[in-house]
Image (cartoon, rainbow, N blue to C red; front, side, top):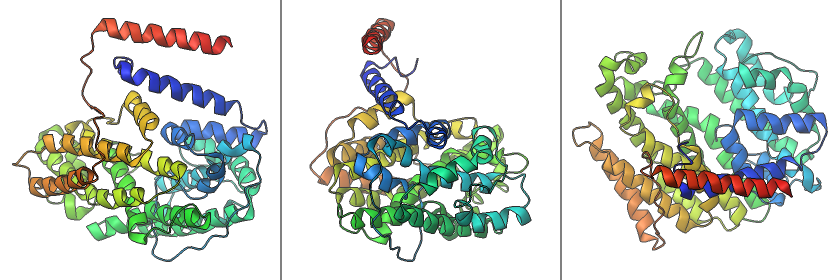
Length: 436
């Protein structure tokens, strides 16, 4: 009902629903492709929506370079340009293969019931297992367990990609697995450790994505710093938002908030989830958000240099959702009480309306302004937060491209009559659509 209480979001939701239905009807009937598409919808609905924004030529290519959480690495990558000879009906399925490969890798890393001596060699060798449909390792829960139990179908789909795609996926999976293995054996103690971990599980794909765009001839080669920041901003936002889920992980938690930050506010990281520590918890949360905001200006610079509109939308939509999530989480004790995320209607609007840098600058400006409005001068990191928010707003304003979007994060004030009217319009629209 939250989305339907905002008539301006209803149209965007309907358009996405129609687009998803159209793409689903184009999926090849083979078992392995159908499985991959279905799993993408189940393990990451928002990423599935972003995939739909890509043009046919890039759906295959980007599939080799965008993971569950974006990535970083220090060495240069070289990719041969893949051949794009797959039929159009299979494009949107193929774009999900790399995501699912790394989601499977991430499932191994996240399953705390698997002993480290078992987990470590799997992480290190995972890039080899993707070539073997006979390989199997059951772990994870719910949809993730289904993914792992049917890994043969993902491997079969992977093996139908061109060799250039396979090599690109293999290389990034190898580096990510090695990085994950390193941090299975050590805690995230310092901010430097935090950046390194996010490098392995996020920045690396930023590197690869930039090199693929360049190899395809659609973009100039972005710097490693900017590519890395694109990944780190998304990953840090996920880590912040998922505090409660991660700290309550059974049989034991896997946390990536750096001790260098949280130890200023608590003796133990888990203490932050208790109500009696709410004030310190929120202060720590604000410190974490402030740390993430340091990457925002790099992200804006990266996106402003993109030339191809499909590349641009694929990169821009998750970044806007990240700054919006930071705005929701900032100074919000509910991060320590339950799930805090952007509502579907607002996500649909962002996907529908993000078409140019003007839209990006406008969204970053508005969400940064929302963060600014919540800054408490008594907060220990308030001065630094304000400095970083002001820098983001200055960059957006100096572009000369700002326009009013009205992205709000509050509960709707619309009257019930408008809600009923919106519901009626949607019902009529869907009735006409599916009657054809």
